[in-house]
Amino acid sequence: MTDPDGLERLWTPHRMAYVRNASDEAVAHDPDLPACPFCRITPDPETSRDDEMVVARGATSYAVLNKYPYNPGHLMVLPYRHVADYTDLDDEETAEVALLTKQAIGTIRRIAQPHAFNIGLNLGGAAGGSLSGHFHQHVVPRWTGDAGFITVISGTKAIPQLLEETRDLLVGAWR
Image (cartoon, rainbow, N blue to C red; front, side):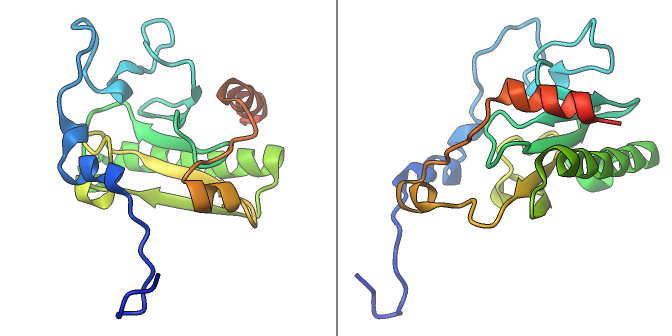
């Protein structure tokens, strides 16, 4: 039904948890690990935790698959250092985030031939950043028609490839 303003409404009451900052509540975790999941990943794979989805490591930054992808190959590029804002990055981190982003785009193009990309930042919780305390940049491959019926109608994204398979392809093709 269309309201007098001419707009359709899609009611999503489950999103209210984000509006109320429920996602920012402390989550019980191992006290020996950093609370931030991005900080558990270090430059050294021998000392790193939760790094099974890391695709590439640099000196100051790394690329990791998103555990909740919009599409196969959706990854994030971020510094090891826990900073919240783009302006908090030092020059070396800024350069390496840019380099890893370019490499991610090239690698994904070689293995998956997407039609386009979304490259984006959500700086702050109100901008959609669910882990806004640790800066990260999304690299999302897109294909014409990738938001199909099931996504639009039921809010469910069908991902045709397992994260492990995507990671193996990206690691094997990363230059």
